[in-house]
Length: 544
Image (cartoon, rainbow, N blue to C red; front, side, top):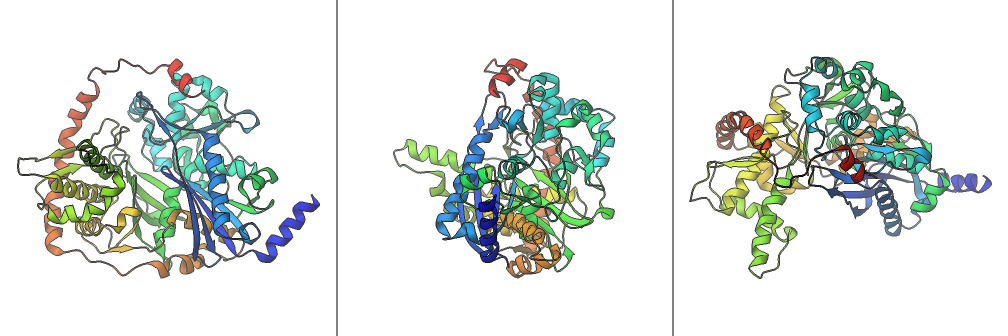
């Protein structure tokens, strides 16, 4: 005990760093910032998950914690004296998914990630029920295969043993918070859009009833507000990650909210629109709770921000840059088969060149490459990607342009479901570095595009919550003025001729998408070639 207080005293005297952990689908990152928001260093570890022929996508909880510790130790190697300099630590991570924890805080098998598609049949049944209207009214969130509620409802129907063995159902960042602090908890954002009410930021009994999970209420953890409460880093966790016992740890909101906060969804005390073009496409508009208008199709999300009375209305398309990864991987495979070894990373720098060599607007691409289908602005677990309008003149460069423009049209489709197009679009994510993508997005939305030069927006958003929690700032809007507003680049206006072309493309894109939905359904009912079926036995086998 005496040693712990001595460590805390040393830390308090030297603390000038906040660490943000962002546990993404692709990469686990630990990022160090000054108290004023300057990024000092970043360390990352490649994430690992497993896929199955039954649509499963799972991740080891223990490996995730080990990767978190590895990233933090690597950060310490880059910043001498980091342990004593750390004023606070904050954690965010990939959203949705189901991370079950049982006796003695041990994992109950592997986590079901947001990419897991096994709950598709359960989602279809629940979404067709009359009670789903009440669930949507409370959460503001369309039911889809990504969500913890859908996963748990599917488990309860087909594999109740998994839930019987669990004591708490967490999300990725919640699992890391548990390992860091020993506290089982979740945040207001994921709690309200999964099982709660976005107006109250609390659990709602009608949602549990709709999902058929009222009898599983005990699995839902307490809800913590990370700008108001921290918990101390345990001695065991401190030893594992190279920091000091007692360091304050803040539980961030879901990565979508944190990335938007760090990238500029709000600045100068005004709300804005922000898109993160990464593995998935996330499109958010900050607004007061009172101005949220829910759509009749019951799609999208309403996700709380760590600002009183402010939420983000969100539409997310399942696959964004993974569509480009797929196309470039095909090219890399073909080139390698010809004896010229190449990789995806070798081809990515060529994207803008291919775009500039291509024909304009002669080919449509619907970017539904994920095996989980689509969740925004429509929900269809059977949605699939495809090109429309191919002819013999098209070459690889035309396919690249079509995919990029397809991502831009999907972005427009998402904002259209939330009302009028935004007056300005702020961008984050690695794909925002592409001139071709920025130009296409500006034309598709018909508004200037503005990039945040914040390199690690998700980790920054979480760190901002910690900065408020430890009193470095009195309120989040004050923190935003230092951490966010100065990093917004000048707006890039759209080319008017391109806007008119995208108006025509979007009309065709939307009409084709609607026409293809019955085709996707027919294809999904075709006999499987593997002969595998999903049973309680196979679910248990896959998850311990």
